[in-house]
Length: 124
Image 1 (cartoon, rainbow, N blue to C red):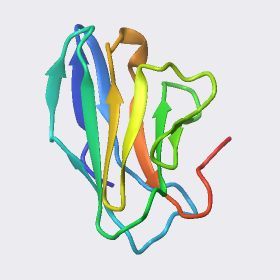
Image 2 (cartoon, helix red, strand yellow):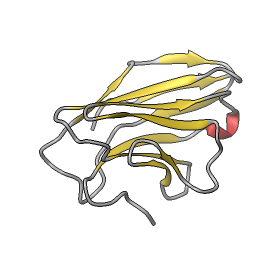
Image 3 (cartoon, rainbow, N blue to C red):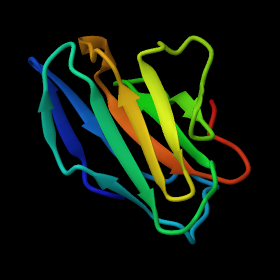
Image 4 (cartoon, one colour):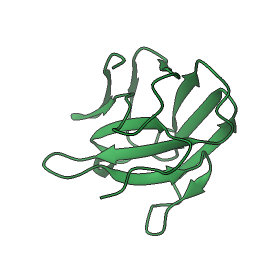
């Protein structure tokens, strides 16, 4: 696991956690940048996930809120899931990926994950 990244939105804490879900490749590691940042409501937040090997577009983004299962936000680097706000967007290919949250809101609080799996994103 990579370190947690605390992000403060007013009094709301957003944490970015970069991890693998079961079934992910054990040969590729993911590294997050930046280490930390402070944001205010309405700001745009960008989170980068760097893969140690080329993974094409096999990178998925999730948000887990307290007491809930992780929710798939973006699959295969750029595909926003149905029902996910258009404030969330994904970009990148091969090794360098970004999740962007435009106009961040308190409801965006939670734990964010990136996951590499070349067969499927985690769903529950």
